[in-house]
Length: 126
Image 1 (spheres, rainbow, N blue to C red):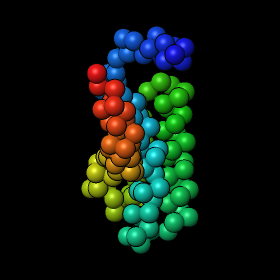
Image 2 (image 1 turned 45 degrees about the vertical axis):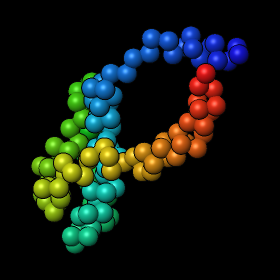
Image 3 (image 1 turned 180 degrees about the horizontal axis):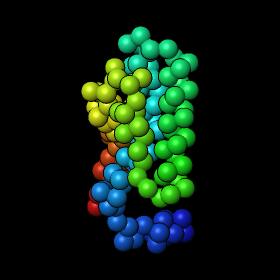
């Protein structure tokens, strides 16, 4: 009971601001997408080692701008401006779609709700 009371005290009045969440996700997503970007360029004939080094430098520079200067993440713009990544320039927006980075999370939530939560709620619906 004490744990539930503590949880209620912590979460009471909790608000989720979807646009703030989206902004945070989009600030970090370019870093998460670098492997996919690099591999698409390799499939198009690029040299993996060269691409890896260039994307590492771009990532470090973009990270310095975000963390050191407090400015928005400009990694995607750096990649768009680099001819080495020309094979993916037209695909970059779809490559950083957040839905491509959540794995099985939606299905796992549905399964958890169906198998664990809903039976307990049904049992205690009175």
